[in-house]
Amino acid sequence: KSLFGNRAFMTLNLSMMAMIVAVTVLNKSVLYYFKYFLGDDNAGQSALAWMGLISGVAVPVWMLLQRRIGTRSLWFLAAGLCIVGLTLFATIGIAEARSMQIFLVAMQAAIVGLHFVFWAMLPNTIEFGERTTGLRIEGAVFGLASLLQRVAIAIATALLGLGFGASGFVSNVTQSAGTLAGMRWTIALVPLAFLTLSCALMLLNPLGKGAHARIVRDLRGEADEPQR
Image (tube, rainbow, N blue to C red):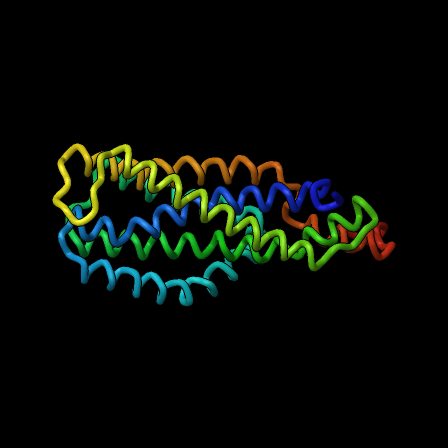
């Protein structure tokens, strides 16, 4: 009950769920796109490998940016980059394997920023809840967050299946132009909608720049010290 009364925890995790839905739909679409749109399965496997590689490279960059603009603001930057990328994808389409690989690697670099923000902010919700309710809950925070991630993945999988099914997709056959168009809109618009939702939810999160430090000082009885 105290977790559900923790505004920082709830808004962060709802933002995370929206983000996970968006990212899962995009990631699960990679091999479909290379197979049915581009006719190049091997390029799809290479794209996934490069996406994994960029994930490790991008983390230090996001850490540096966090120090400059704050953790919550980093969410809006990373999500904004994803939204711009998906808007371009929806508008112009991508008909060449190398271009799609570059697009996916760039998207993954931005997505890493979203994951980084979530895991950086999640521990801070513990102190927020402690100050709000007087109870310090740690284990349940991470346990519930993991559960909500799995729920979001299930939602994304269902939405992808529904979107492709509504488009007339049939596995392992040549898709019609109408089916491909419907699939492309699913790949673009579902992540766009949920990333936008994640930003709206993050706006409601109270852990802006410097907020956690002030909460910690309050808990230590040092609220009268100058704010850093």
